[in-house]
Amino acid sequence: AWPTDGLALCTAADDQLNPALVADGERGAIVAWFDYRSSPTISHLFAQHLLASGAVDPVWPIDGLALCTAPGGQAGHAIIADGTGGAFIAWHDFRGGLSAIYAQHVLASGAADPAWPTEGRALCIAANGRFYPKLVADGVGGAIVTWYDFRSSTISPDIYAQHVLASGAVDPAWPADGLALCSAANSQEYPTIVADGVGGAITAWQDARNGTYDTYSHTWSDYDIYAQ
Image (cartoon, rainbow, N blue to C red):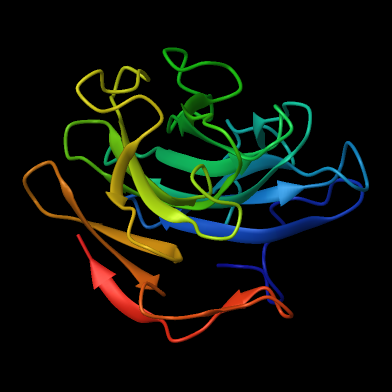
C-alpha cells in the first residue's frame, strides 16, 4: 500500500534533515525533523503524521506542522509518544543566543497543544549552553527530560533533568532550570532515559570523572558509564 520508493512527508524548499519518529499507537507514526525552508543557515522544527495506510494524515499541514520557528534556530530534537496519539518533542534552542532546552506537545489532531506556549515550553535557560535532550513519558500526560549542561564549566558538562506537566507547566516541585542528576568532576555527557513505571525515570550517561582532558584536541578520555 506504500509507494515503492517511500512516501514524501515534506518536499518544502531547501533542506529537511535528521528525522526522528515515534509510533502513534494506530500503526502509523509521527515524524519530526529540523528544517531550513525559512533560512539556509538556521533550522526550525517541523513534524508530520504518517498513517498506517501509507498516506500522510490529511488533517495535518502539507509539508509538516511547525513545532517551533523561534529566532536563532532549533536542533538536537528527540520525540516520544504521549499515549493518546500525539507526541512530546524536546530540543536545544538558540533563541536567547546560548543553547536552552525547550519542549512542545503536539496533539493527534495535528495542532500544537494550546495549553503549551506557542514556541515551546522553556525547561532550562541557565547560563552557558546545554544540548541533546532525551525524554520519556511520565505516565500521567507529562514528560521527564534530561540533557547535558555546561552551566558550571565550559568544558565539563553535567547531567540535569526537568519534569514538564500535562498542563505544559514545569513541575513546581522540581528545581528551576532542572535537577542535577550528576555534577561529579570532569565531564558527563549524552544521557539516555527510560521510565521507571512509577512516574520517575532511570538515566544513564558517559562519564569522564576518572579521565583526563586533552587541551590540544579539547576532548576527554577514559569514559565510564553511570546511571541514576
